[in-house]
Length: 155
Image (cartoon, rainbow, N blue to C red; front, side, top):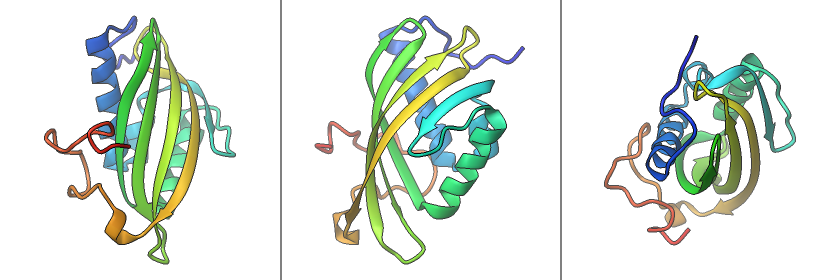
């Protein structure tokens, strides 16, 4: 059986850990790796897509990161209870024409007892920005521990 610590029920400390681990995974932009954090029968709502199953989630992520270039994400814990966590997030990316965006959103997550995400509901809005307005400048991959979070950046 697969497990993905930290496991529910979550505490403040373990919920913050879970959020950072999710952020780190998504910043890897590795769809196969990220998909392993979800149950085989995971259910998502992501923009206009409603994938069901780990493989469908992986395929969504492949399309996402082929389109959203130089992707950098910050997640922040909003609330938690039992097996559920709510986060807010922002990420920056550009399209193949060079237009930069900052995407803002909220996610509601529900985990099984083994710490795998069974349900993910995401609401996301994209805002075009100028390259000069970017705030996320770390090298691609994991956000450095000393990089400001969303609240620190006023987002």
